View 1: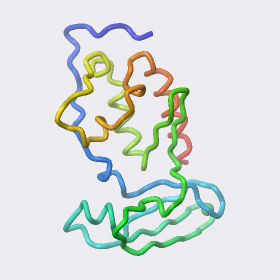
View 2 (view 1 turned 90 degrees about the vertical axis):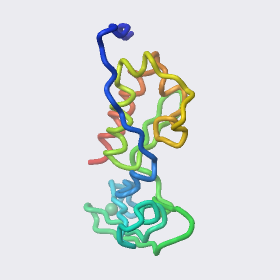
View 3 (view 1 turned 135 degrees about the vertical axis):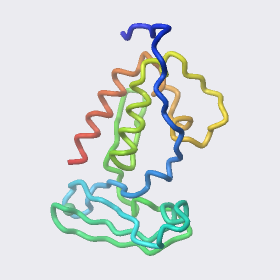
View 4 (view 1 turned 180 degrees about the vertical axis):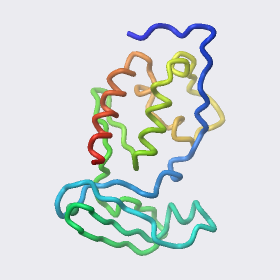
Length: 159
Ligand SMILES: [Zn+2]
């Protein structure tokens, strides 16, 4: 059990970010060898970051077996090229998935923040942010230790 937050503990700031901001790279299971493969956006250039990261052309490369898979720019977002996401954190309550290590660390830092866990409220204007879309069970203080352990296990799969 975690101790309650002291009044003098100040909440760290966790700036709200949208999930699409984490779509390059996306870590997946390599379809050829099962290792961790990386899907990167190859085009278009970065003028419109949202369009690039959501609908841009992509290339998957595997550093273990050198497999390559490509996907042209598309109107339907498919950032994994249909492959399973690598960073999955299963718990008794459900699972959390992450596009890459930056995404994982961003969510982990938020969930690990003791003050946030004590003061979290579901409502708020930022209902499109990564944090607002986390399942309620993941944000409960009672589940925090289990959730963080599952996230740490998922992190190890990025190697
Ligand atoms: Zn491979």
